[in-house]
Amino acid sequence: MIKCHLSRLMGERKLKISDLARDTGLHRNTITLLYQETATRVDLDAINTLCGYFSVPVGELFEYVPDSTSDQE
Image (cartoon, rainbow, N blue to C red; front, side):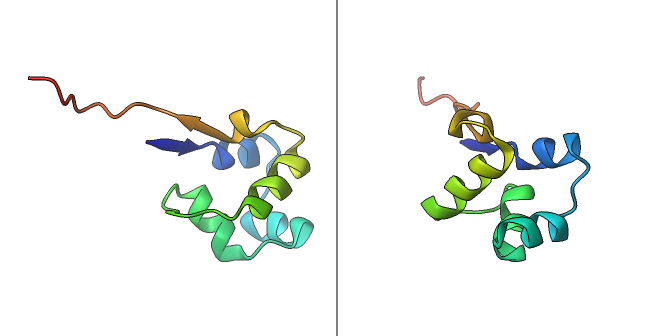
């Protein structure tokens, strides 16, 4: 699964979704889906904008976490 650390980044800077939307020009819905980790698709331009805004590499915004269920028997 892919984890999004947007809520942590926003919390560290005490940003609201509306603040981030205003500052970046991204749609509130896009930010909300990423914040709540319910997004199924993300536009590369949105990722680029967020990484630039927070001055972080993609790896600090997203993280791959292996599923806890095992396919081995």
